[in-house]
Length: 382
Image 1 (cartoon, one colour):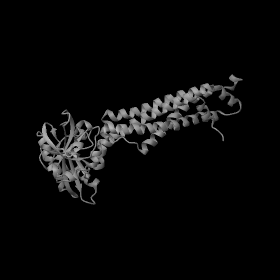
Image 2 (cartoon, helix red, strand yellow):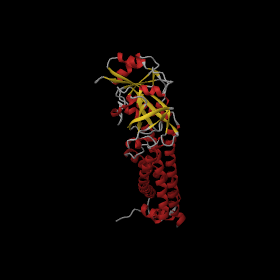
Image 3 (cartoon, rainbow, N blue to C red):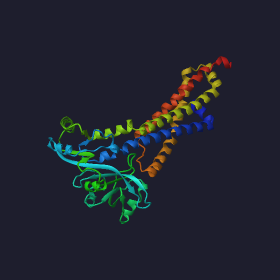
Image 4 (cartoon, rainbow, N blue to C red):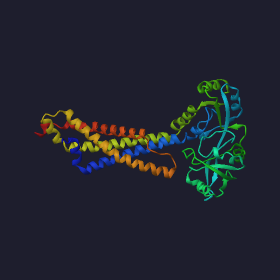
């Protein structure tokens, strides 16, 4: 069986091969983590949007994202009931308040969402079954997937303990649990009724809401209805379909914050680091075997054959170096999920993307290292 020359050259210097594989794996891990964090950033910050049940959403045109919402008059939402195809409306209040950890007694900002319990607003596990509880004064539902800094609220509640603490300086009781998840925008969440929300934020005007939700009749054209609303409603309200509402949030994190840029830059840096490492390995390998390459030229082998050998080395390094990088990244994802409660997980798209980037990275390094082959002149040897 014919053994490729490229593999023989790489395996001849085993320590050099291990260093190259370690460098490629490190670059892959860096790219996996940066892309994982970036995707988790976008996904966690649109989980709330996806959970809201409705077809069209109203927000203030001054709002830039869910973490920077501006209120608008609720009468704009009620005006939509006069439009053809509108079946029902719901309103959501959203703000941040200080949550007192019932264990450590320290405080931390938590996102508070309020709505009319008679409306079906959130498609989240644990919300619908506990709607009657938040009708009671000063009762909230706690997000059991919030970060641990808020205390062992979910454990206490499951054990049957009465969980009482303070939100914004007001005494509240946890009446149930639901699942939304921590995000870059909010480490934790609680849901309550609109009346309880206004008790917690007594400086808020009842007539000013943060999100208006419109549900259309079955068979109604969402795009057409949304366009009619944009044309006829005053410009102090912004009309978005659900898809536009989600994309609006994504755009904020992609373009208006440094976070998305930082993670993308980290991916680019991983690519550059890997390219430099592989280049150094291939360049050294070519330099060490320059007499052998010159001998092959003297025997009649063309430059194209020698260039193919270097390319084969690059591809072998890419494939073998990718495997440990992929495996370690899986463990890092699991560790990150446990430490941050962020949904950092491997996806097929990301795995394929990083693999293709690794191939490109190694082939680019090989292309740069090939310039050294020009020095392989048989006349210098013989």
